[in-house]
Image (cartoon, helix red, strand yellow):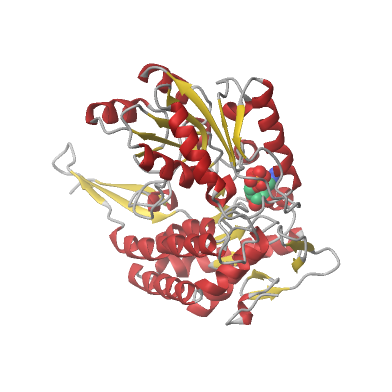
Length: 483
Ligand code: ADP
């Protein structure tokens, strides 16, 4: 049982056109990954109901876009304040449906609510442009206008934060947004909708639809009213969205899979590198798209680093997320356990050695032991595919060029990390890594003030920073002639 200060935040009703829609027989059960218990039952909305959400967004669009930026900013700020005030309750809801430790749930909520505050402020700075024209009787002006009705499809690993990250810039730019949260974790999205309504965000401007992913995704892709889709999830589904929305030449922002390299050079501060690797590898039990997946360590320090990392991993407190002492919760489902087991076995078959962990946790269920393996082959599955689990795979290298080549040998390009104290090396390596984001001497890099996103098959577009709002704006060029 959750002990919420404000029980009204826990709702299983979808939020369409300012009304709350409850589940019928066709509902989707939301279960707690820690024990399989039922947390709620959300509706599996019909096609007509999703269409109603799109129509409601369209009906709200003009008024929302026409409001002065300052008015939109005030509402975003109010929503932000309500999220911060209720962060403890929201964290409980998040942990109940997702499994992560309460402290991480709260950190997710607070750090990503910051996107509402940030973009509320940015709304006031959507500057156009006056371009010196090449003819005396002409003036060139560029307006920036909201793109129109937006849809967001969000994942289960950050059920709260991935929504505020998208809703912040969309609403700030003047676009209504409809969110389709992951079916495993819709309750965090619905709690955000409760607070959006309370903040005074007009009906139709922020909506949450729950139901069958493919049906809703297809509707978003095919409906001409939906001008843009923002998606965070797997590369496979991202690719499908591109294809599905090709007919309508839809605008897309895609935050897709990662396979982040984490490189430790021989001149690194090893303690700092171990601390960074713990953060980059074990946060959310390894279930983040920016998680370190492949840890490359210079051969001269590989044994020492591996030993220290294993010691730190062994100390992690594994348990139910709702226990304040817990540092590692369960994985999201059985399929996640099967995947990491496959990656681990493959690495062992190729000669890797287990330093700590090495299999499912004694707690049973979907818990997996924080695991460190060393002597991993660069060809192992764990080095090629996103593992999304608490398996730290250490691979040694002997030169900078080799480390860079290994790091770049992937179709992904989201985050990369490296540790070095040599300034020339820092610039050389940072510039050569094929990634949208590079953490230098840190294992945590996300911030509302910085552009988050990937290159190669890790995605299109950026969230956060002053650039993030452009994803929801179109440029219109005015050519004034005969002056
Ligand atoms: P993961 O493997 O992390 O679950 P997915 O890409 O499958 O990542 O899921 C991310 C989001 O995409 C979820 O909200 C999920 O429901 C949604 N999704 C999955 N398949 C489709 C699809 N065919 N069309 C639209 N959305 C989808």
